[in-house]
Length: 384
Image (tube, rainbow, N blue to C red; front, side):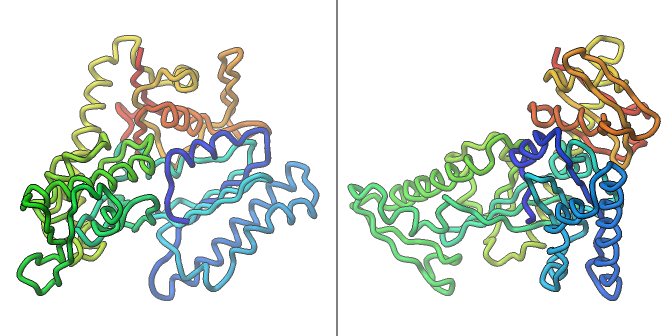
């Protein structure tokens, strides 16, 4: 599994009062070093079993719970790795993700899934989409700074021919596809023959095609805030922008025939467009935090931020990756207890704050510890 969406994260976050195993490990992708991947994997699984036994679970029950993880250890599985492997297992759920992040090695067994390492892909500067459009092909890619994956689309037409074959027969539009060597399309574009409409009919057909594409993407990208970048020949981009309903489509796009570009080439050009967008958003949030620091609209302690995140007050959050603060939050008493070491029933309070912020529509910046504003343990801007 390579795609991680906010809706799926929300489902994982609701798992509680159960035995939840979270395993993260970096993966080598090239050369002889890839032989380390199964070894690291087995060490992490062994550590999970040891934690289960320490919690009082019988050896037989621990082995049965971990059986789905052991079944991953096949030749085929190891041939499809990325930079990092995340495994989430409970009696009710089992999911794994091969993702473009080299996670620090970590095994956590608590009553909730430990999800903070995944937030780098869903945070305010972590992820974007590329929509590669031509009249013969629609492709969607999910990208990060370091990697790009193609996303399998459903309920989205794959070409203008598919989109319009049953659409609006009163227009009496007929079309055929020119070859890439022909004089009419260049990119294999569809040529329209209508009842005197000419270019207007052509544009109208494209607009209806792109509206179907946009509607399909809207259901796929619901609740997303990641920027979307268009890739296509220059005359198609403004037509799609007219049809678009996704709120986070960027005005700048990649021009040219995307059918001629590999995923890696699209990724390189898209990152040049999206990187300034990410930096501006992050810097604006830092500036807003500093501006409001002397007011009650910011906080920089676990005791303040965790309840605010739980009760949907956090607009933006900076949280350090690779660190844990163990403790317990009681929403009924609105109280936070922090423990110097992990105790039974504890959860990572940084993780808890980040998850509630993200799933409640806030922006989360999962950053290196030294990059939290003013070198704080956590930093938040409140909605009110």
